[in-house]
Length: 483
Image 1 (cartoon, rainbow, N blue to C red):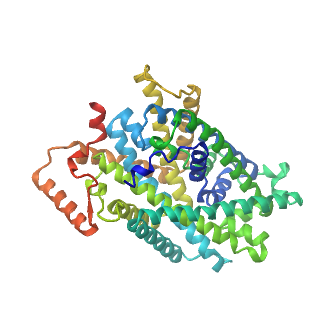
Image 2: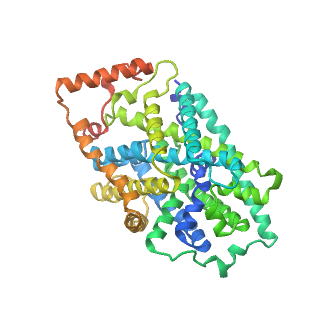
Image 3: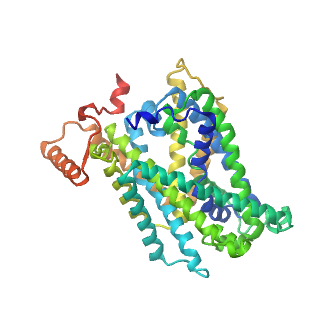
């Protein structure tokens, strides 16, 4: 089958390295610099945040490498937490990912796409609110239709548009280094780099790290395809040791390049940092920058739609989401119901927040999920000390990560109680949903028949069926783990 031909795809160390680096380096680097600088308060400290952010990702990646070979299941955080803590905690991670993490990330990237496309038409002001939302919604709807129509189309778009982000980053770094060689580095001079634009605070610094973490998101993507990695004991750590420092270097150089041509105030006032950079330095070729970033963000939307729909699909197969989301189109084999859920959630979030707050919102929940998963590593060592662990990191690694994690989330919640607290509240709403929808097996006949009618209607509208011949083959992960 087409699916089985994908197994073992990551059979080359170079492919594994490119996969991880390519998933980390995304549209976030065109979005986050403004937020990092705004919260860090100075150029110098913002660069320190970018470097330390990469170091924190490296610690997290090493912990995930141990989990990846100890619990060799694709699915990342969701699979590990369900295995270690049981169905409720796994469901809460799935619930927050479906309702918050993926739709919000998609909304941020879609808004960035529309801003970069529209900014050249509005050089002296922000693009109209309605225009950015309409263009973002159109983009999400179009890519949802593409992914509903064909898996092959979706993957081809991803391959083609990856070139956009690489072109933009290489161009920014090269032009920035030329500027520095010419002596244009006033904002980077040590005497001025640490002049604070506003009084710093621990809470603001925590928010700066949340902004940077959005650009680094993707460092755990290898754990979603662990079963496809050949010799994970050797290749997972190798990919981490090379890719994380490489991405950190690229991000730091990109920010240095920005400051070679823009003052901190200019960067904060820019609605599209890379466009402003291109207008100042590229002259008649400034059009290259918005096109390159638009291509990057377009591909990013496609990639997140692809993976988020698969997460819905996996959760439904395990019995944690409605079974309709585990169905695929009869001819194109695409998970249309899952894609439509992701698309709808993204469009709703597009209407309720701006880019800056949405990044804090999604990064807080992301970090919360990472911390719970890494805490699970420590608990699993205590629970099953004799379990064979092909990779076993020093205890200082998860402990250091969790200390940073606790401080970061605590001060972020203190600084932005509404934005961060809302995500926490939405995650906790999953508790009653879990007990009513998943744990409650003997539901009244009227409820069961209503669910069956809705499922049947969804099947007819979307022309979808279960991938298996027998739907009873779908068995919740929690039941499997108890056998």
